[in-house]
Each structure stands twice: as structure tokens, then as C-alpha cells.
Amino acid sequence: MATYHAAIDALIEAAGPRDWSLSLWDGTHIPPHEGCEDRFTLKVTNQAALWTLVGARDMTNVGHVYIEGGLDVEGDMFAAFDMVRRLLESDLNVEGGDEAKTAGLGGKAASIARGLAKRVPEGLTGSRKRRDRVRRAVTAHYDIPTDFWELWLDEAMQYTCGYFSHREESIDDAQRNKMEHVCRKLDLKEGDTFFDLGCGWGGLITHAAVHHGVTALGVTLSEPQAEAARKRIADAGVADRCSVVVSDIRDLPREARFTKGAGVGIIEHLGEALHADYFQLVTDILLPGGRFLNQGITVSNPDVPMGGKDFLDEYIFPDHDIVAIDTTITAMRAAGLEVRDVESLREHYELTLKAWLHNFEREREAIEELVGSATYRAFRAYLAGMAHDYRRGGLNLYQTLVVKPTGDRSDLALTRAEWYA
Image (cartoon, rainbow, N blue to C red; front, side):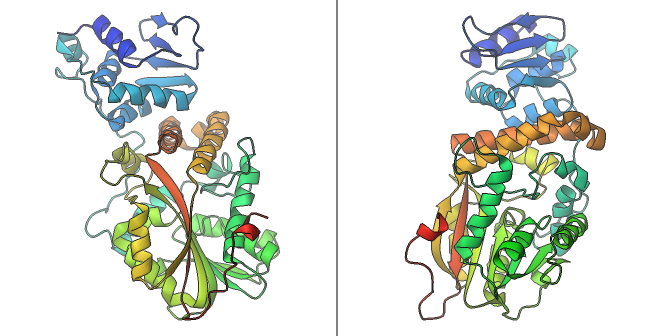
């Protein structure tokens, strides 16, 4: 039978060299190892949380306890994920015995009751292709008040991976770089007709219209996003050339009328079940010779279960589905698109998430006032955890450029040089 003190000893030993402090509900404070930097303090606020931490075998259980306040982190959240990952990958398995029973855990360490921040909407049943299911899943995430996103995203409200020219670059500059990088790959210019599937708050279509002279259409399932995008477009003075519709992408008119298009961060919401529909739509609405850029998160090894997937489904992205890059490319080719360029932005997304996390933690008071402490904790854990997965290589992110073939030349530049000029 493990005792309270044995559980603490096991936790400290399994977590490896300790550059962090441990603070317990009874006033016990254990400093880092001598000579180590104190990167964060792990606060354990009750015995149930302790037994969960030493007995949990997946990140989701730990996440539940963190959201409800059984665990807290003061300091470097990214470093805390490193420690918890080492703990979960150890062979530590502590039976709680009588002390765990007293804590209400029935013998084995397990997650305490959860649900405070749970955002899974009703009706996520049946086929993943159902329009009402797709809409409910997407709007559950994006219909949080726009003020929430404005507190921690960049000035262009880009909620996708930025493009960093160096590691110290600001998130505002990195997101401008990303939008320009997309536009250059597509060779956007005056006279082009451009569509953006999953346009968010309108940053990319506005940038494309202002800086490249295109006529643009943005598509979203979120009314609050569309409203904010239309205001951004009007403020930029391009309302005569930019518009936004709220629609399932499958309900868009199918005639070919666009020269260029992009889908930046939409494919994760559609999942493998809708890959064929997604890329067939792209083929149908592009004119011959038209280009399309897809930017999407992928798993590096599809045979290894994604850590924390259940947590993301319950609290952040209901119905999200992340597949390997070869699955996406196969679907592109099946829709008749020619793959011309694939670029990994894995390091860029780690930097993006860390920048978001910094902004998010800076605005903690305002965020908690707006959406509550449970949602604050859920998003803090999500941002740090995703950054950690990109650092470890479990996740990747690719920009894939495709062309609707004409049977003739593609008019792509011979080299990538002009993209990086």
C-alpha cells in the first residue's frame, strides 16, 4: 500500500532531474535540486489530485484535474508539460490504497469529476459528414466572443501557424509573413479571383485584396467570425472586392470561376471523412491552371495515438481529426490536383504557439473575466501541450501547393527564389 509520502517520493523520482518546485496543499514546499533553475512551481491542491498525477497513464486525465484546480502551474507551462510527459512515459504506477480511498478514488488513482469547461455541443452523433454535425463542432470552438481572441492573437487575427524569419520575431510580423508567403506561392496579382475556405476573421482575404489587388471570397461557418471579417474588410477599404459568406463549403456554387484559392487551417476540422469532398470542391471551383494552397496540421506517425486527443475533443476542438500528410496528398491527387510543392512548418508552429501562450498568460485576468477560469485553464493547457508536441515531432504542419492541370505548362516559377525574396 502506497502512502502519501511514498507517492510524493515516486513523483519526484519519476519526473527526472528537478528544475521545478513542488507545493502541496498542506504547506509542504519542495525546492528544485541544488544548482537547478526553478522554472515553475507545480501546485497540488488536494490528495485526489496527487493520486491522479502518480496513477494517470495519459495526458487527458491530468488535464481534467488541472482544469478543475487540483493541479496548477506557476511559471513556465511549456516546461511543466515536459515534466508531465516524462512522468507519464515512466513505469511509475502507484496504487493509492486507503489514502486514495479516503480521497474518494476507490483504490486506484483516477481522474476526479470533470466537466466545468467541457464545450462538446449536443448532437455530435451520426456520420462525420452530416452538415449539422460539422457546423456544431466548428461553431463550438469559434463562437467564443471575438473579444476573447483579440486579447491574445496578432493584430490580423490569424489563428493559424505564422512564418518566422528568425526565432525572436514578433507574432504580428510572423503572421504578416505567413499571409504574404501564401500570396507569393499562389502568385496573387490584380485580376485574380481568390477564395479562402475557413477564412476566420478575414485577415488573409483582406491582405490579398489590399496588397495584391485580388477579388476575394471568404467562407466560414461562424457568424461572429463573418461579422468581424466584414468589418475588417470595410475598414481596409476593399469591400467592393471582398466578401464573406457563412456556408458549409459543400453548399458553394460549383462552377469554375476562381484563379487561386487557399485553405489555411480548415482541414483539421473536416477530417479524413470529408477529404474527398473538400478537394473535389477545390477542383470544381478552380479554373484550369488555377492554384490552391492547403495549410494543415498532420500527425508524424499515424500508428501512434495522438496524446491528449480526448482532451482536445472535449474542451477545445470537438470532432477534430488530424491525419498524416500522405493521406492528404492521396486525396488531392484523387480529386485531379497536381501536387507541386510541400513545405514543413513544424518549428514555425512551435514558435507560434509559444507566442500565443505568452500573450494568453499575460491577459489572464481579462480572459478569466470574459470566459471563466476553467476555459482559461483549458486553453492554456492546449497551447502549451500543442507546442510541446511540435517540439517533440509528434505533430507537423505542411503547406501544400497544388494546381488544377491544363495538360500544358503550369506557369509556376522554375525555383522557389521569388517566394523568399
